[in-house]
Length: 108
Image (cartoon, rainbow, N blue to C red; front, side, top):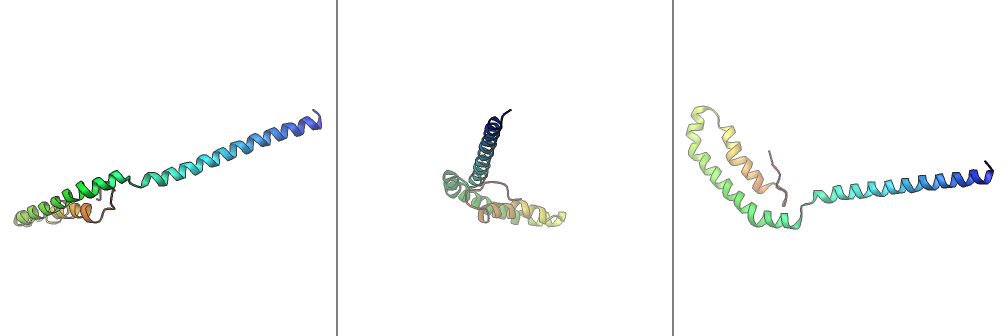
């Protein structure tokens, strides 16, 4: 193999390596951008949360608190107040008041 063909082969190999490396870097940048972008709720999800879910979860919190107060003597007699309080009052209240707008995941 002559020196000229070795240099040409080396240049082609270097060019292919450079092209594959830059393509991988672009894919990594797009992947990290999409990951950040996917975590943000859409405007439709935020609107639905604000107009429908928050008012319904507020009603659920009030109803849960009422049911808890009515059942409190029975819960006290059984010795388990923390469980029903958590399920009927704490979970709905967290879902209503402390959850970020548009995030509809569980808050346990």
